[in-house]
Length: 286
Ligand SMILES: Cc1cc2nc3c(=O)[nH]c(=O)nc-3n(C[C@H](O)[C@H](O)[C@H](O)COP(=O)(O)OP(=O)(O)OC[C@H]3O[C@@H](n4cnc5c(N)ncnc54)[C@H](O)[C@@H]3O)c2cc1C
Image (cartoon, rainbow, N blue to C red; front, side, top):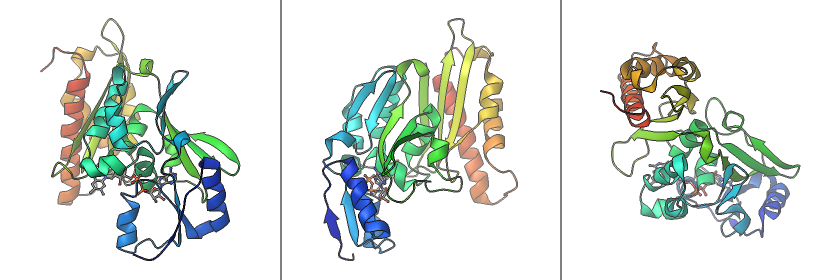
């Protein structure tokens, strides 16, 4: 690991000022779980690290109107311990079922989103439920949709000197049920494929909104918008799970790639979609 200067700003604005002062030499560090690996193998050699650890304004969970605001430096361990109502409990469940305890203790939701590795669960989560991302720069605060934050081919569209300060999740009324399914080889491995299914169902059992999002098997999570909107208006109990799983695969993954890896990804996404729908939709069904 190359030597570096470690800076500790007092708040987000000071972090932005430090990033501006040091320009491309500076890099943010939050929990260090992704960045330290890059420093150790020297694929990243920043002379200056600006630490976001211990900044109260960037950490913790609070309500703001209808939205649930999760500070960017909130660790997965903290999220796991947070009791959230309705579908938002899935946020804590996702946080509690990734990596291992040391990674969850140090790793932050904001760090995962900024590392933007498609295998990380947070990317599928924020895209799937329609969260918004709060970004601070010298020009002030802006709030982005996931599609404005993640670059289409992978990575983020953050400008140099910008800091992700919070994730703004929709309110508890936004969804009736949110289910996250993933496949990993070993329990502490990152996902090979993931699917998030978010649904709203009216009192008569008719689907009023369906959002199916595929992650990990693609460079950036993709919402199967066509498949979801085709389901709106159907009785939830009548949904043909296999047909929807096939439709998601067709909409999101290319069928031109015949390599075993691509075929495997298609099978995984179909199986996870079916599983997510089965859990998300009201019973009875086969
Ligand atoms: C062994 C291991 C197993 C893992 N398994 C899983 C898994 O199963 N599922 C899963 O989802 N994830 C997994 N992860 C990934 C883990 O979730 C991330 O490494 C962690 O959340 C990143 O957060 P961090 O705070 O440590 O980020 P850091 O490593 O500190 O930073 C990551 C990157 O984001 C930038 N950055 C950090 N915070 C901000 C910010 N607020 N604004 C702007 N830029 C920022 C940094 O400059 C850096 O480029 C695993 C990681 C490890 C090491």
